[in-house]
Image 1 (cartoon, rainbow, N blue to C red):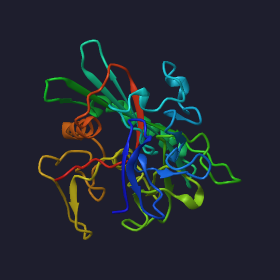
Image 2: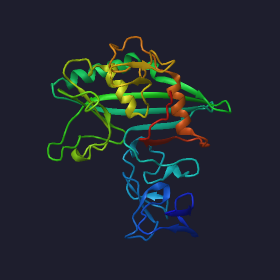
Image 3: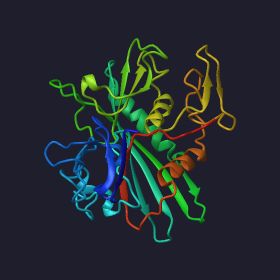
Image 4: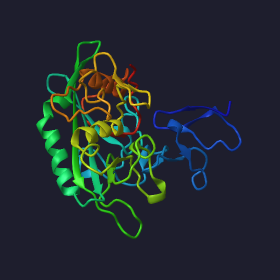
Length: 307
């Protein structure tokens, strides 16, 4: 055992109720401690911001403060750490709020910055946004909790033309919850292609997709949105034995995530199973009891979608 600690709800170590092994740097919510200035367990690195557990406040303002004017930009967990947790990720933003009928709404959103070596990023952005608009109703679903309360789930993906700062190679105007899509010629399937992790060498802090730009087969809207759904935590719903044999999970034969990229599917008449929305709700709500005000978070954890 390397560590055993009891904390107050806001993360203060309780006197005489902790044990830390030599060299073990992590503590509250699994975050790395910064003990150099304020002492042990008083400052934590959440990735995007530093947190002071003694006052229950961030040391810098929320980058989305203008969207949530009802909250102080320094608050932790909406001042309710019993019901909420703060996760630092970069893949998608979700906003949870309650309507006047007592039902919950879960809005999941991401902005995808599109780059193309063929100079057609603007045309592709328009194509992808049109696909989302034309299929808007398919990206909505619901989940009924044990007490009968409804959770309405909506996915919103926006595509924009990407811009790079040529000095540090960082994506310009890149915010939490954003992702990137690179269309490049000569990309090899299974080796270079698909939704992949952070690219620290180029300073890109969010997940990115790399797809072949040579022709419209892999760069078409259906394939791109399929991979963006991976960035939003959803997994493939098909089997691929790497020999060209693709078979959808039972019940997902026409689902956007059940249609493998090696098929001749072009995006017409696809479905998007309500099971995806149920899995979002189950994961993000778990067994927590939420208060009556809004809360927004950023998440980068995959949904456990089993065949």
